[in-house]
Each structure stands twice: as C-alpha cells, then as structure tokens.
Image 1 (tube, rainbow, N blue to C red):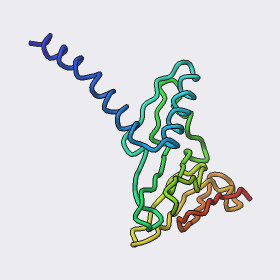
Image 2 (image 1 turned 45 degrees about the vertical axis):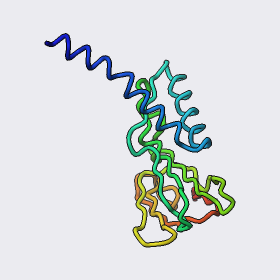
Image 3 (image 1 turned 30 degrees about the vertical axis):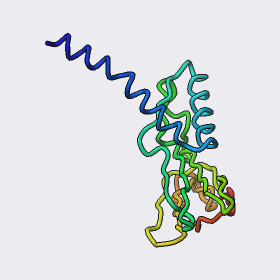
Image 4 (image 1 turned 90 degrees about the horizontal axis):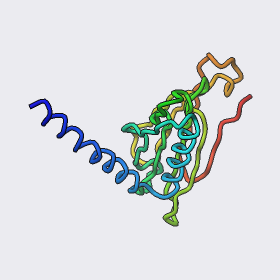
Length: 160
C-alpha cells in the first residue's frame, strides 16, 4: 500500500511542474523575460533552483482603462541556494507594467519596496509604497511611505 502511494506521488510531480510552466507561458513576453532573468540569477548562485510562489505575478486593472496590468513581486521568487537574492534591507524588487492605449505593455515602475497597498477605489488605483527610510531623508530602518496614482507614465522614487 505504501509503495502505491509513493508511486502515485512521484507520478504527480511532473504534472505540477508542467502546470507551473504552463501558467508562466500565459504571461506576456516582458514578464516571462523577468522570470527567465531571475531563474538565471538563481542558477548562477551555486546552481540554485528557482520557484515562483503564488502571488508573484498579479494581473489586475491599475489604470482604470479596463485592460490587464501586472505587478511582478520578487518577494515571491525563491532560490534554493540564496534566500535573499531578490530582496535586501531596502525591500524586494517590484515591477509594475501597465497596458497602454496602443495595447502594448509599458514598465512604469521598477524598484525595491518593503510592502505595498493598492487602493480599492474604482478607476485608476493609488498604490502606497513602504520604502527604505532613505527615500524620505531618514535612516533605512525608519518608515517611509509614498503614494502614487498609477498611469501610463513611468515613475521612480529617488533617495534623498
């Protein structure tokens, strides 16, 4: 009986890997490129194995134009040999893509973020970012919150 259970479990393992690969294939090419770069960085770190946790790529309407926008949260990327490869004291890499009026994806933000919250209001969303204290002229341990209305226009936060 135990042998049959182990055999069944082993038979199911490739299916879960395939399902994960299939879901990655459904992402737009620019996001697949981000994932491939992260996979390569992990492999370069002592032949690490890269995994994508649920919630790593969020698909939602951030601009209010009823088109798919994406948030890629590197906090949900895992590397077996280098736990902090995608994060540091300033937070984890976060990338925001919006679908422009012409239908193409545009990267509007890429930076380190400790946490973020998306407004629940209808239309364009405001995101509150929890950043390294240096972005507010403070030491790194201090809280620094900034808000940004998400549009097609790229933005960044500058260290003071």
